[in-house]
Length: 463
Image (cartoon, helix red, strand yellow):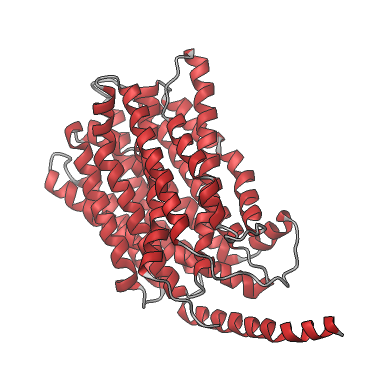
């Protein structure tokens, strides 16, 4: 099977979908925990518990969504139509999550659960098919790595927009009313996300389709089949641990700047420099690292990420030069690993095809998205519970020494150790470049065999 090359225009179009998604995703990562405790009025314990409990819903809906998109057939493809269908509901869900109703304490807790569940369901409905679509666009592993580099560069650009304009928009729209300001800012982000998903739909195309000869079976059999794939299991655990660390750090960013650094005036620039460095890391990933063995490169870079993150703890927070230097270096290195990780997920899809003759792209990505959201839940819950145990008081001008130390650890040492631990998991990942060449050859042979059978089948039917 000839390798399918993608144009720069199509790579950009695909990446803009994640720009739109990151208008919401990065807002949730950076601001939602802080919004719930300091603006909305939830206790840290309530916030943390909610983040964890909602994941039980994802445990059902994520694989269901993966199975649904794998079985979808339209003139626009299997995955691409969902980008069109779910764009507006996803944008609306963003606005709902940042609305503060006047319902009383119990009513506000109920509304927080409902709006957060709605947001996570809409995220699943649009992000599962979006991620799986990469495999339907090209059959080439190197092209997929390049595609993921464009995706995460543009995704991080969406995060950069959030970091630059979210808090200023809150001030401009709210005019002192932060609840109104957050709602207005998120409404603008939601509309922007909708527009970019429409662009993504219009500029992409699915070219790789599974053979119709595949035996259809239930979602539970597909899931059982996937769980026997040891390479899928490795990446599932990597995503859980990675995102737990990412959220521990990301969700405490506002707390770290406001409480540990005691420089709330630097919140926007602090996030912006990290985003810019992340964009550079994503862009550089494919051209600098694409020719090397993916698992080896990932192991090396993730250990470096862990070291850089933990090193922040030992820097005096008033030493702005050193703090910013480490944040920039960490963002640069860590984001360069992200396209590699997502490209490895595509490789697992191909591996499963040679292992069981099942094209489970939607299932592979949906289950890994569940792993990501499980990590987010564990990280978010841990932030809430640890802040509560340390005596953090939302909105208080001065926090206890225990709360300051807890925030510092959550931003530095704890996620750093989690990043470094991923190198151990990756020792069990065996889909290196040599193995991928074998998989590519097997898939090409199978495709050629299926193609040669078509005329024979046709003649038998005529007879």
